[in-house]
Figure 1 (cartoon, rainbow, N blue to C red):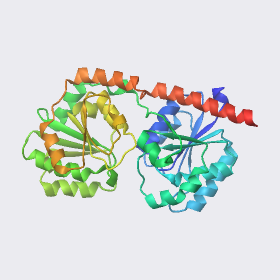
Figure 2 (figure 1 turned 45 degrees about the horizontal axis):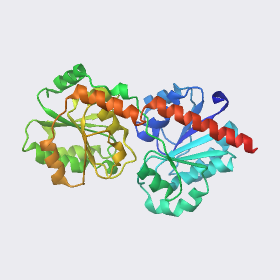
Figure 3 (figure 1 turned 180 degrees about the horizontal axis):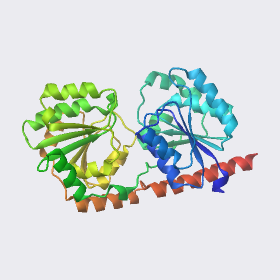
Figure 4 (figure 1 turned 90 degrees about the vertical axis):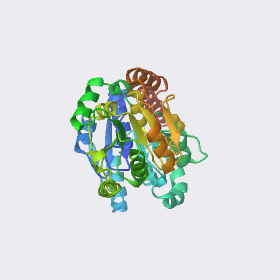
Length: 368
């Protein structure tokens, strides 16, 4: 029945190199017999759009969600009435998803999935105010983790759908490691890496302060920062003020994340909040040790190579000084196997979600 179902993957944040975008793209890559389109209000990365379109999807860009919410809502209803999707799968971080879900309800879409991708949103007051409308707007509830589900759905039931990666794509590569470290002039160093948008939630400032203090005690420490965002200029100034400009590199947005992970010795992620960060899973598939903030769900850990720290600068400094690099090849093999066993494999997740889509569509048809 797969090809007779049409779905819309609706992003409530801009389409870019972020988990909310990459999850549905990876799922669509894994279930090609269920056509899916994408809707968003902004595209931050043309390569990501091309990747979505490579699955056969049309990417619809609506009026700006925050600046023109009424125009956005009207355009959404019109789009949904014209396209007549069987399923609308809405991806977001808070009850502001009520806007998309109510548009789908008004357009007569029978299957309306609310999917939580974070354990906290940027507008907590609006989140609380919209909860009654949100609770009446969706038919199915999904979340990337238990914490993300509790944030979005409260005490109402939801289903955890594991974030999807291709574990084998992140297998440790010694040649790539040596190439990049040589290019940077850091062959004999201990390299810490952080990957993520330069936004307040990622809490880069704490890591930079802790790294500067650790660097004063371990001269071989280096730091790479992968990503981009509005806080980049401030973080670059912070590095200069701390005197660590010569031991840090801002690499911008990169497509070669597997190679970058191979080049690192440690992944650091001091986030204020997350859903279930795929980069931590990818790092473990590469055999990396990982330092994560205690705000991140324990579901992220695949084994003994992950430590969860409070957001305390002194403890992060001590951990950066004392971490012990792993046997990368062996740790990578273990990480890949555990990721697949725990259900984080893209193909397995796509297969499971495909079966859910079919059941949802059949149940709707049987009720008509």
